[in-house]
Image 1 (tube, rainbow, N blue to C red):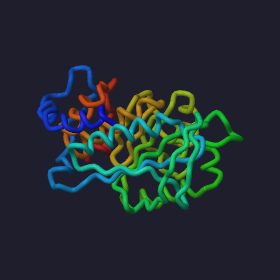
Image 2: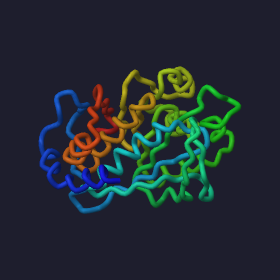
Image 3: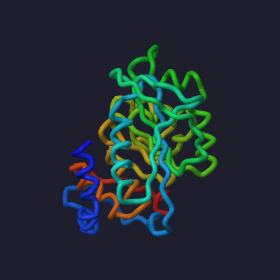
Image 4: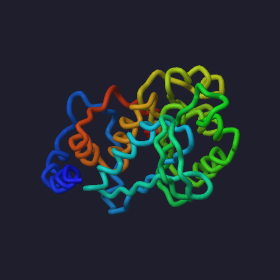
Length: 244
């Protein structure tokens, strides 16, 4: 707790760093549009969690958005479909998740896990239940932006959200995603407008940082990178849909 308090009290000083250009090694793409934070509105982020989900798929983006909230207008919530519940992740981590109301979010993060376990908990179980894909489809139709992380993109495919869209996922799942009608590319992060996808596991942090930059401005992303001591890898592929 002392370390976190020290980091929080240092946020004002590090705010000066956030005005500096991104580090040369950081992922960067074409300059995003006007920052959401300029209007004072908070970016409301819901991270969906379910039994069998990969820990880093959840906690990578959770850390990025939560740290950003120290100095920028962001709120973050761990949620699950249906009633509030305790969820057990892939490596046994137990998390209390709130009941989900997708329409209360501006951005929904969909993690993956369990792609190689057809009969176990994870993405296939969520697809078979049908509740999560249906909720994601409804949220997307209502204009909520979505970040798919790793094999969470397979859940988005089941919701009908990747057909004909340029996207990425974990390298072991790319052929399956392509068979379902997505335009799959070998890229760490793909920005296709209201659908942003990140490749395997740790790339969820890259996707989260990109969305901070796109929605709140480069200062928010640079501030967060400095706090968590994480440098983005590769470049963000922005499609023509994302640019319009």
